[in-house]
Image 1: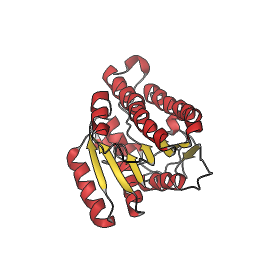
Image 2: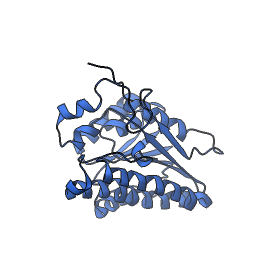
Image 3: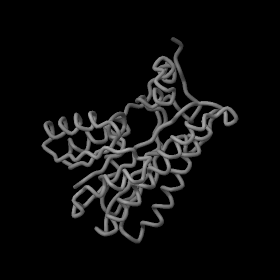
Image 4: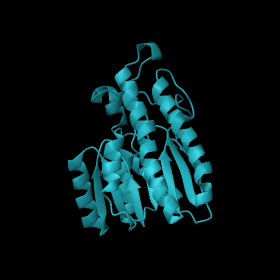
Length: 251
């Protein structure tokens, strides 16, 4: 079995690659940071005796995405695609929004997901089977103050997940969305342009999910029996009930 994981250099993507490797799946891992990809490849192959291929490209750039996937052995059968690559940039009102932030989110979260999905879906159609797992967010189910464009991109992922499920149904391809609440990764550091102190405050006084929690969920949906498709999952920390309802302890 061969699994593609986008955005595998950190956080949920890295943990997802690790859990699949631990269970004997070969991998294609993608990301923009070549050194991290190489390091993860070495670790997984050494610890789990699986085959790992790295593809280093910017998911926002269609020619790079196409070139990367065209470099693969075209006879390879991709069984599972985990569309994990995504980010938030900035946290401001619409009227004060940074257009560069908007474009980064739209290009990564929506267009990048589409670029990879189209290529891999066509491979799966040729193989007459497959499973695409899209990593969404609670932000794709609700909207919160100053989250405008990020929420819009994750609402787009939610809609695309439903559309893929319908379009790929005749081809024996499963489609699932996993929508996390608060997960402590590099997410907030990226959102706040590297401001680690500000990022830490996002999770202060509460116990967020870990990347491993989401990876375990992804692995679970990917390993259901052939007749079972999990369409959609929302997974939250026990102390979080919605995008903005969180219980925090005084520090």
